[in-house]
Length: 462
Image (cartoon, rainbow, N blue to C red; front, side, top):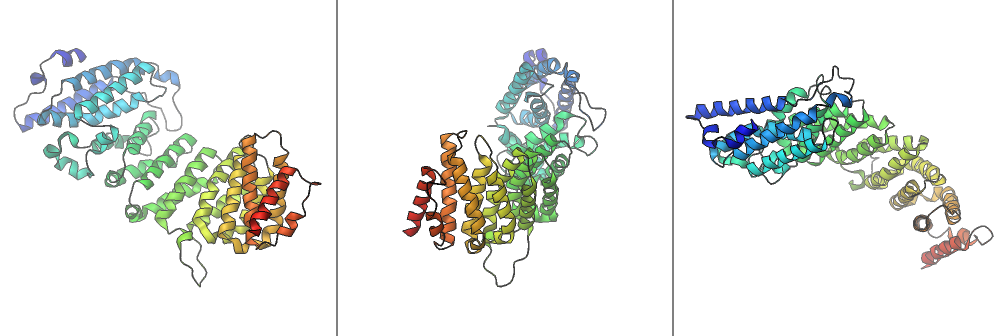
């Protein structure tokens, strides 16, 4: 086939008489391309609960290379006329799915097969005049599924092929079948992540269900891929479209349940996605105007309460880092409404500042940031908690100043952030803590700590 495409007369390869003849020719080439791709088809799992060993894919790379070469030769013979454009658009979805399947670093690929697949993808972009992969999928404008066919001759090569790719993938993206072929989820995720607004909303009904299937899977890698897809949908779909048909609420429930998992990577992805999804479902508490009546609890409260509850009991260092890194953004979003959660925030701050987190001290630095944001937002409520927090911060200053295992840069960051927390607490108490800080002397701490405390008291007096 490669030799035929390279040597045969293009006028003979792509000739047809009437419109019906061109339709038949497109169907014939689609069938031919599918047959060639079938020579390098991936083996299927026998069930939806297990994965194939790497040895099952041993023969795939050697078959994929000549298929890529044949398809690249086919693209090389296609001309620039309208008819050839229609033919290209008919076979492009199949070519793109095959190329994406084989240019990723997976057990069924080798360095040579990945290079061949990458060359096929580049040839497809070059032949069709597409700038890059997003342009290949979306075309020049926002087109719905019905508009793609309507612009057949007018849009030419500038039309996207997203609809065609979804037509190929959708039969394999059902609840019973998607896990039988490892490549299907990867091709779908790659496709979705290339599509941005405004094109994504036109295909939302076809992109959302497979993303939810991935999100609901028990394997962490599939779950993370699903969360990533859902996050991309949230970021690239208008809020009105997400709220339509209660989609946003479905997404919220699907993501919220993952907060009970113990996989750090999943928790990190979910907390980031929820932060953006909550803005679709409701106004951020920090933006609400003052009200004489008590504010009702909202989803922001539910998420923050659950996160703080898990943080209080968490002992795994990696999970503590994930929670601590996400918490400042949620405190920012809550604003003064964080007053509802001050008891839990206080317990988290005390617990996390007591435990070292070498070498970068990520958890401690993030928790100090949490304390700063909380003090600024809810300063009238901090006076009754100052005694406990002051003792904790002073102990931290003394411990950090004498810890020889810390690098100089990390030690300086910790001391600076702790000093800022002390200053904010002093300010929230209108300077009432200054006499207590001045009682600290060299008998109980180093000169470095005394210098920090002296700076705080001098700044407050001014």
